[in-house]
Length: 169
Image (cartoon, rainbow, N blue to C red; front, side, top):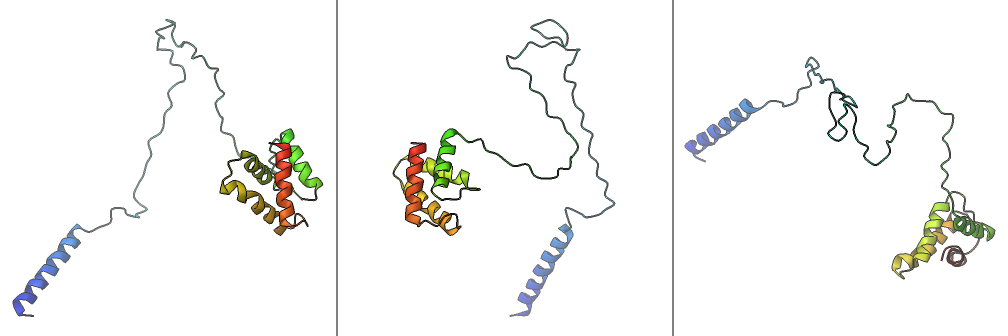
């Protein structure tokens, strides 16, 4: 490379470096002495007595909107609890029948009730699609693998389908 070309490259590199250096700098600084403040929030009064309602002509009175006033949520302090309350999903009579029939056939349904009820709705939902055909055997296989029954997968699949049809369909 010739000397004028080298000189040109060096000048171009220095110019670019100086330009970037001059424009550089952080846009956010972690300086703990930087003061930050937040403007206080003010709430408007719920009923402004200075306003006059056009429909009633009375100050601070507004016509009913047709729906009952809902109680506003209130902030409360944290409370310590001794144990987590159980979440109980209300069961329909069909649910009770379905789960009871599976239990009577020797399948432990405790803890998987919602999944089994969902499987039953897939069975009764019809449609004849791949999901409808694949769900009962998959759930039956999981029940067998989890040790919830000693029955073979095919028999558990048939039980799920028959008890679902009996209870829901």
